[in-house]
Amino acid sequence: MDDNTRQRYLRSLPGVDQVLQSSVLLKVQVNYPQQVMNDAVRETVSSLRTKIIQAESEEELLDMDFHVETLAQKSLEMVKETLKPNLCNVINATGTVLHTNLGRSLLADKAVEAVKEVSRHYSNLELDLSTGERGSRYSHVEDLLCRLTGAQGALVVNNNAGAVMLVLNTLAQGREVIISRGQMVEIGGSFRIPDVMIQSGAHLVEVGTTNKTHLYDYERAITENTAMLLKVHTSNYHIVGFTSQVSGTELVELGTKYNIPVVEDLGSGVLIDLSKYGLMGEPTVQESVKEGLEVVTFSGDKLLGGPQAGIIVGNKKSIQKIKKNQLTRALRIDKMTLAALEATLQLYLDEDKAVREIPTLNMLTLPHMVLEARASSLAAFLKNHLTGKAQIKVIDGFSQVGGGALPLENIPTKLVSLQPYRMVTTLEVTQRLREEAVPIIARIHKNQLLIDLRTVREDEMPLLQDSLVRVMKKV
Image (tube, rainbow, N blue to C red; front, side, top):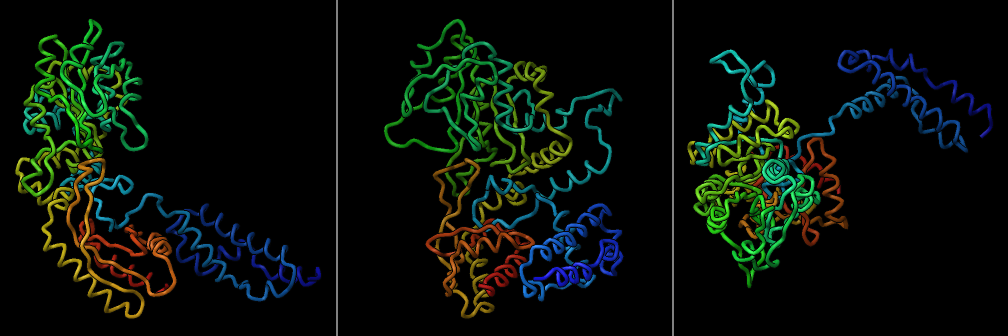
């Protein structure tokens, strides 16, 4: 392409100021930061200028639209993309209730409202209203935790790994902690109990074997430098077959004999007996406290169904020591977490209400007939709108608890299966679903797109239906 032609195209390219003064941008300029809009227009114009300079023939430029309004619209789309939040809502159609990648527990409506209220007003976070003097932020949930678990004292930090590290640092720094080799767990993100213990300053002493540990293994390992017997609930895996582990009660008896505290990390932590609802039995926090353990730690955003938090309950004397540890300030939770946790714990004062209103518990205990009705309704809708696009049917399947909890639990469910008729992979379909305004996260199995409605909220159903139809019609 000759220089004269190239210069003609360059001269026809609108300037940045022209685009900024277009009707498209003038209408919305109050809605967006001016600097972001300026940058978007410059980048749009600059990108088009580069294409003109690099074009080898005029044919490459013939389809380019140099109108001011067109460039303004492209700039506006760039502005919207720039300002779009990285953290956004998604629809979880995987059936995994505590999906770590998707944020684990959904908060109950009352917890959401509590967060909303406390975050937009000043609060008595660290003010004792009865005396007018400085108070403790932990007092807002300590009485509730003690009432629900039977413990003498309680403390909450930012997550359970932090809780375990804080307890070890307080009660066993520079000394030995005895733990069964079969309980040396690794949780998500490669955080391992041995590594947490090293960071705490405690010295690890492994006893027993992977599948079998006996009481005498612990007793033989006790020395004058032993500070703690640690029990870790293997909530994210199970060893089956020829196995044996020491109970909390047995460890407490041994600890009492040698005046050594026994601490248990329950991991997920649960406050109600799930076996009553057809799920596998999981040790409750109350049971561990009743066994006489010095301290028990567990998560707030797993089976409890609350915000991310590490909850520490136990003997009052030990809890007081932990509260005074300087690390407690580094690991403390904020007012929004406290508000959400308090509201969640209050629901547990009425178990039926907790199961009904805490999303995690509600999803885990949904009746099979409800899931079947939801799946049948979605399948009928899709068949009506996607004739000739995909094979759609309702099939049997299983949901997962997730979050490292109840790994052997397969909860029967009903799945809506979509299998495209055209030569397009379900991987491509799931990619397009993730690109929706509200991304849809689903499962794939044998080139079938599987939708599990256990984890889809009722108010999300219209969005899910529209997205599935829109994406499937394009394949």
